[in-house]
Structures are given as structure tokens and as C-alpha cells.
Image (cartoon, rainbow, N blue to C red; front, top):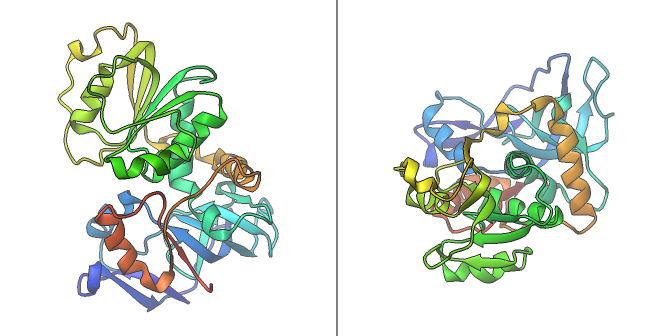
Length: 306
């Protein structure tokens, strides 16, 4: 089968090569990949992992081999899955508890965007408890996690304020259901019950000054590349507020499949959209450049076989 591996001599450090067929463990399902999505964190892994490493976590496709323990969907089932690695290939193994069947009216491309970004958004939102009627601030709202967080918070009944990097992002994020879309917090006096931050740096400091009493900040990323010089006094006014370092793989991975299935059904019902560019998988290196240069809104997804 064909698949991408890290190769320092290749363009963008990535090469498309003939690879051995994946070898599943008893609890793994083998999926013929029809689409996969990229995450910004994976770009760092391309530089950090040894030569010959096979990247790719977010996949959607068709089951071609069921798990030996009998706990996976049957062959022929359309699924979305969160792989450990190897998803940028024609076939990949995925633990059976990390896959979910997708509705017939949900495309492979839309489903493939869900695992890392969708699970991060959904589970980070849960850190603040029920959000019905509460005020939620989402930074980096036009990014992979942000697009899902805005919509999922809206579905849950929250009043959603979205922060974007520039005026050119405002309308596309407002179209996702945000009640307010800002390019900065200057002059804002509003306080928020839950803040989801994937930017870090000074923006996290600014966000902390807008936390409501008893509120929660779930910091899930640092897209700015800058450390946040937070001080105790930045939380003045946020009595009993808390800051949580959120890592989706530190949550219960055995229920990934349940949450993926939930979000796939939201897509099928027209309640969750997946904006972002779609490309053929042989344009993976170009897609990497697009992601690194922050040219894309939403999720970058590659499709195999049309």
C-alpha cells in the first residue's frame, strides 16, 4: 500500500512510499482510508519523530478487517476513527473503541475532520460543566478546534463570543453561530464563565482578566508560540476561578468512539459544519505548507480516491 513517511531528504520532510500492510492487535480494526485531516500539532511531530515515521491520526473510511475481539464495526461499515499514527496512508489500524459509524449523508471528508479537533473542542467545553445560558469565550475561533468549539457551544445553549486574528475572519466565524466575533479584548468589560484558549501568549493573559467568578479557562494549545506571563493578580475579579491545562489524550480514550459518533450525527443533522479546504492526498506536502502559513480557515482535509 502507499503511505506517507518522514524523510529528511524529501520536500517538506515527507515522502509517499510503498509501505507494509498494517498489523492489527486483537482490539484493532483495519480501515481503508478515504480521507484524513491534518492538525497543527502533527506538523511539529514531523520534525520530532525519527526517519520513517508514519504520521496521521484523523481518518475516515471503510472497515476492511474487523477486530479479532469482535468489538468493532463489521467490514464495509463507513467509519471515522482516531488512530495513533499512520493515517496518512491507504490503510491504517485504529483501536476499536476509537471508531464510530458515520451516517450515510456524512462525507468521509467531513467525518475525517472530527477526531483530534472535534474531541478537543467537545471535551474542553465539558471542563466548565453545563454551558446552557452561560457565556463562553473561544480564542482562535477560525482554527481547527475553534470552528467546532463555536458550534458545539452554540448547540449546547451557550452565548458564544469568538476571537479571531483579523477582520477577514469575522463573517465566516459569525456564520458558524457565534453571537459576537471580536479581533481583540480591548475595551471589553464582559466576563465569561468558560474560556477555551488555543493561542496562549499575551492573549491568554488578557483572557484571564475577563474570567467570571467561579469560571474556568481550558488552555488546550499555544498557537502563538509564546509563553504566558500570568500573575495571580490577572485573576482579580474571578473569585475561585481556575485554569486547566487541557490535553484530549489525557481524557478517557475508551469513549472516543461514543463522542465521535455523537458529532458525526450532528453533521448528518445539519447542526455541525466542517469548513476548510479539501485536497487530493497526493497534495499532502502542499497542504502542510498551507497549514504552516495559516492560510486555511477550519480543517485541512485530504481525500483518497476522489
